[in-house]
Amino acid sequence: MRNCLPLLLLCALLASACQAIPTHFPTPEPTSTQTPVPSATPKPPTAAPTRAPTPTLPPTSTPTVEPSMPHTLHFENAPERAVIYQPIEFAITTDGVFSNPYDPREVNLQARLTPPGGTPFLIPAFWYQDFDPQTQLPRGEPGWRVRFTATEAGEWTVQAVLEQPALESVPVKIRVADDPSARGFIRIHPENSNYFAYDNGETFFPVGINMGWGGEHPLADYERWLDRLAGNGGNIIRVWMASWSFGIEWNDTGLGNYTPRLKRAWQLDKVLRMAEERGIKVILVLLNHGAFSETVNAEWSGNPYNAANGGILARPEEFATHLEARRLFQQRLRYIAARWAASPALMAWEWWNEEDWTPITPQELVPWIQEMTPALRLYDPYQHLITTSFAQSSVPEVANLPEIDFAQLHLYDSSDPASSFQDISTLWHAQIPGKPILFGEFGNSAGGETVDSFDKQGLHLHNSLWASTFNGFASTAMYWWWDSYVDPLNLWPAYARLTRFLDGQDLALYQPAKAVLSSRNVPYRVLAAKDRQMIWLHDRKYTTAGLETALGPLIVTQQTPEPGWVYLPDPIEGLTITLSGLPAGEYTVYWYSPNRGEWLQRKALTCQGAGCLVEIPSFQGDLAALVLPKKAPPPG
Image 1 (tube, rainbow, N blue to C red):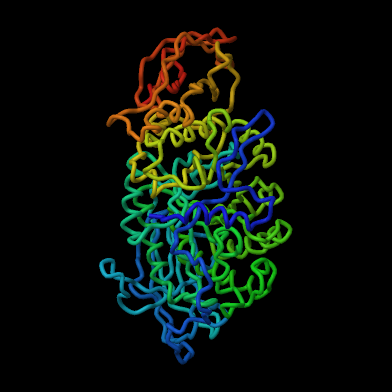
Image 2 (cartoon, rainbow, N blue to C red):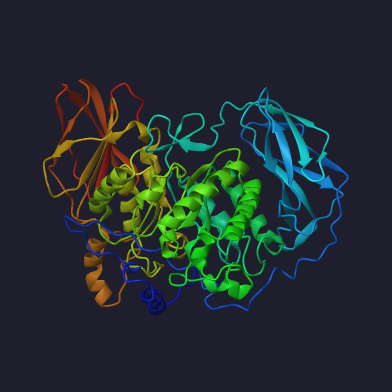
């Protein structure tokens, strides 16, 4: 569990920031000229440094070794067969001894890969230590590894190569079998750049949640969370390489030598493998804002780059401009890509979580991204997507860079998503045209959500999932409070209720469409493809504000509702909606209850080519529909 810092401390931290920085608290109900303003990612756990630690130089826990020049280089137990898009791993042995196996200036060990009839390319090897899953203690001797995922069937050649002294292993042949069901890595959709697709062209619509870090037993936590997300149709998470979780460089390592944190790297291996097995994609956050902030979630006092800890920077903003800092971070990128780029679970690299909470300005960030992106792509032959995130706005001068593949929205707001998300989507797509807008963080409050929340049914979560889907975002809104709220209250079925409705539908084929509802008091959205449409209607009372009003008498008397009680407003009846854009013909309207996750009645519909009048059945809370050609297979 997170054990968030007390609210007073949260306020104090924000008060120390510049006045232009918004608070962590929910933004006010939007007016006609105001859309909710995103706020900072909530607090990390108290395990993150909150005061200056004892200064540490490069780690004393790493034994000093006497380097010796290598004379031999070969693969150990190299696999002879593989399957396309399934990773394999090689062990490389050498008699060379190196004082810092992470520094390519000392040892630049790589693998040369030659695809069938293609051009050879290089990927770096990485230094690896195995650990016992039960004791979490080192197991066996450390050594070199290479991870590789074939993207083409046929015969590949793999050869280990060392730059200085020049050594090459005996080439190894690997027969890679085809797999017609393999979909590949995630890309920008080739036909609709507002969405994502696999290598094979199949649309990928991310439905998921943040899982930034685990607790005292992180692997057990991730196994439980991933099982529950996957079991309810979810397919994406967002994971941080923070100092208290999977970060490989901090004040216990010093700069450029990651040996004291190889267990954390091994744990991240396991998390990515769990995700692979469950068909879940991962956005891997490389830098969290607190590590280079003195004001918001401040960790600068514990950062090994800080000169007070024996580092090389007097101020955190120098991280973007200091020559040696940039070299050291590129070295870290080399290790990260060497170890995790081959994972089929990896969807994207995220440079920063909410970089605008650091003192690094956009004018400094732009050239930094322009320098770091080709460095990362040099080590990542799979060319994974790259993103970054901000707390306060879209920052178009960064989001529109060609080096940034998709933008990311973070928002903590208590107002009704059914009403507010449309304006936000319109604004962001106007500022960042032609790119997916992934909804990377969302919550009712940045101050914390727990099992004590009055919204124990996850109504705000529910509304955010449906509103983001129907307003053109490239993903559902990814809720933040995964460990303190969603999991302990078992709100995972909210994902199943959406994915059941979307099953078999390709959102990249849909566009927002016009329709006329017989009432102005019910928010609604319509998405239209060539010969089919989706409808979502939402009662204005079906919000956390409505829920709080319904619970008001109980809250005053400090009582709780009866077991199994679920808030639903009074039924809405007698509505009609007139759809436009459907070709003349026969259709079937399949009605669906989003809050119960059940298909309801179906009705025949005849369209004459102008408007199609549809009678809406009575509903409580919200209601959805698929309008499909009469001959199309039914949903579900």
